Image 1 (cartoon, rainbow, N blue to C red):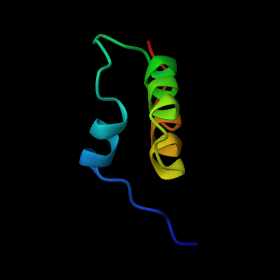
Image 2 (image 1 turned 180 degrees about the vertical axis):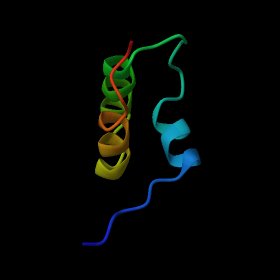
Image 3 (image 1 turned 60 degrees about the vertical axis):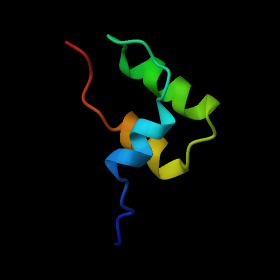
Length: 51
């Protein structure tokens, strides 16, 4: 199985404008609202849960 590659610039572009600290849900929502590619959304959803 081939894995799609997501770059740091892709992720940063998708979450531009988010004020930190921000949780995983906020980052995913911001990326979705920015029409980020599915690979970016998948990468953000794959982050470990907050502690």
